[in-house]
Amino acid sequence: MSFFTGLIIGMAIGLGLIIACARAENARSRRRSDLAKTVATFARMTVKDSKAILPAEFYPPWLNWLNSHLDKLWPYIDEAASELIRSNVEPVLEQYRPVILSSLKFSKLTLGTVAPQFTGVSIVEVEGENVSGGVTMELEMQWDGNPNIVIDVKTRVGVKLPIQVKNIGFTGVFRIIFKPLVDEFPCFGAVSYSLKEKKKLDFTLKIVGGDISTIPGISDAIEETIRDAIEDSITWPVRKTVPILPGNYSDLELKPTGTLEVKLVQAKDLTNKDVVGKSDPFAVLFIRPLREKTKTSKTINNQLNPIWNEHFEFIVEDAFTQHLTIRVFDDEGVQASELIGCAQVPLKDLEPGKVKDVWLKLVKDLEVQRDTKYRGQVQLELLYCPFGTKSNIKNPFNPDYALTTLEKALKSGNDRTEASGIGKTTTHKKREVIVRGVLSVTVISAEDLPIVDLLGKADPYVVLIMKKSETKAKTRVLNENLNPIWNQTFDFVVEDALHEMLILEVWDHDTFGKDKIGRVIMTLTRALLEGEFQDSFPLEGPKSGRLNLHLKWTPQPIFRDT
Image 1: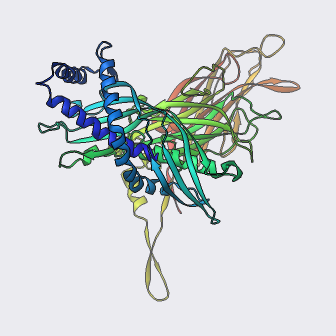
Image 2: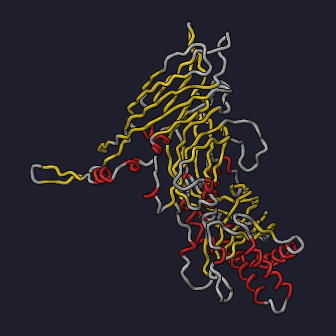
Image 3: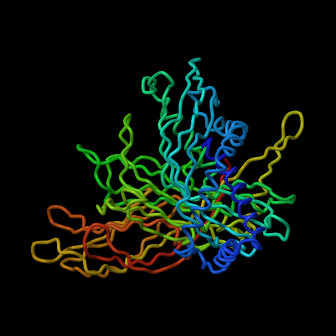
């Protein structure tokens, strides 16, 4: 990450000056004038969330011209960036320094003699931003450099190690924003830059005069520190702003835009990674892959259809470009966990204030999806709440959402005065809201149940289970019927609706036993939001079969001191 910060600062300023010089020489060069007009035209022609690539007959010479100027500027960029890197990047490395190390400092730092090469360029319109106030350029860059970077590492036990960063290979897309546009040379007030997409980042670590593998854990710890530092300091939506003209550019800084509420409900049909028994799955969720911003679920042992029902909250910084990523692993104990599969949800697909229930198919790799093997699915409930709109949004993951004005006043008015032997003292106690109520479930009917008896029929009944409280009820048995109609209603007193789940299992009754046909699993989120609804739910397990249900929620929120 060290070389990238200084590198991009130098290139952004150099690129801005090149563009400014090209615009200043329009009267002397018709070709440069045509170039400036073409760039301006494409900046206005871009369509929402799309890229406008320069015409083929014009674009390669322009790109070659840019690369040739970068080659000339590179020795000066190298010299200027080295000291800048030391002063700006060492604090970032220190911030992410692993606990097994006591210090990380540069002893040698040059970017080498090989300049990066730009392999693609486009003018883009950034959704949600005012394009008329600036120009956004994306540059695809490839760098197989020969920098001389040595980091002095000191461990907690006092061992000092000179670690050399070698064999750097990088391919990525940098976003450069010239904003705001002004009528004063060089025609823009500031330059913001960010690593929009990291396609490849490879490097090796070597102890100068030794083998780093002889010290367990050091290589992985340093590599993770470097990658975290890159992610948190320069990867989009994080951006660095360099003022060119005097002014206030605070509006260009990264600011959180809202929160994402995520309920990890369950997974089904997970690939078994164990030779003996079944996988022990757990999930890792993140918007930005930083250690302190990554959430991990509990592990469900020996289960390919785990039920988690866990809630997580994330800060959203750019709802138009960020994704929620989920990775499901098999816990291998002391060994490294094995990836079962992963999936992504673009945040731009979420309607603010609306809960979205999604089933995501797991894949092996989010970037290269060549492996079409079925790895299972995972169910999430998602709610995006932009800042400034929470008062208008019903948030079922927040217990306050169901409270009346009086109840909220009771909750906030939690000061209590207690008498003591000397005088009176005031004790402040927090009060936790428990969403308590009665859930009425009417099992109406089932349709198209699979044949499970030898005579071509089934004797179905339904078992209703509240997962957390373990309360159970069941319908009557209807003999020899693949489309049974029950119309039976059951009332459950729910003590904590935010963390409760309803499971309905359809069974076939036999004289000497019973066979499970399928099941339906649901959280109470929809009941909390809508109060009452009726719907048809497909059975998990069999190839056919649906369960028709009517649910009604009657809230009775209570308080308890914590």
